Image (cartoon, rainbow, N blue to C red; front, side, top):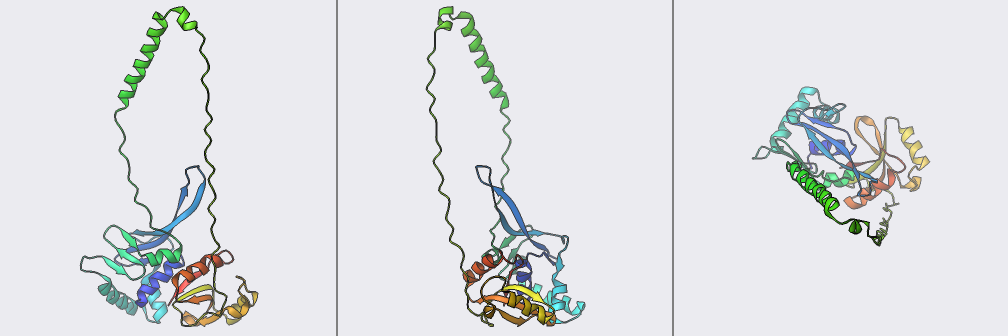
Length: 268
């Protein structure tokens, strides 16, 4: 994966909006959904694309400047070179591991959706409104007319005849068996410093803060099973799981987020 592709991927995994000058803005969004019974289901997570920058979005040029230690002009040059290679012959922008940006839409990559624990947002089709309501008025008028004719012309004895009550059949909805979800498992061995997927539980400017977090063991894997590795700008990153298996990394991400909501996958 290209270094700039990696920057875009990691920024979205941390659920931050990233602005690509001349293209648009990518942002992780949540959609509330409901079951048929009216119960609120877990939100559906995906990535939205807009032509302009959104509030609190970070420019990819600034990220390049910070990561590579160059000035803004140098970062813009690197961004321009990357953009020329990312643009396909059909004009769309392909970002490895993230997705494809078209003139009016964005198709996310399965790797990104797996990392953020989301799915592609469905396409909503608006149904046309039926303009045949006058037919229902005619049907209602015919029913009322039939009732009036019956009342006027049916013998009184017929109207007064006892009617046996209808038998009411109670319809019992079958019980829905709750789905049993096996808890996600995460490795409890020391992380590999050279692994591709790194589940990070914190980034610290001061080394003592990183070591204090490891000693506290917030995700319950044992303080000896954390990895403290160098990060950008001289900071240190605390990794609780490092693996080359993407499914294993996602399972660890979901488990650790219950203890540390800011847990994210650092892609190397």
